[in-house]
Image 1: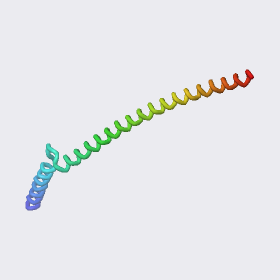
Image 2: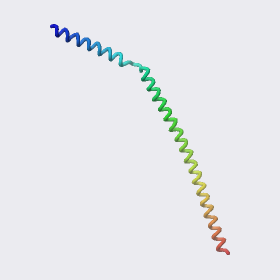
Image 3: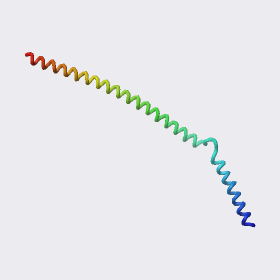
Image 4: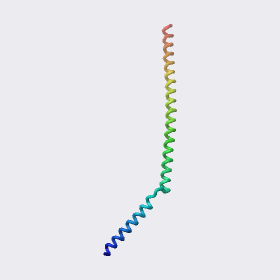
Length: 94
């Protein structure tokens, strides 16, 4: 009889202790540490998005510069070809 009573008390203490641990550990609201981690994560995400936007704008700017340089190169090549043709015609005319 004594062993049954002891077992019953042990089980009762374990159930009460377990429910206390679960009720304290699991709350509906985040604690200060979780809020801090969430805020840090949010700031990191915002910073990464801003860096992505800056990088995208820089890439577009560099692509525009490259396009402009390519157009200038094409224009210079055309002028060179025209000049070479004029020189060739001038030399053959003499």
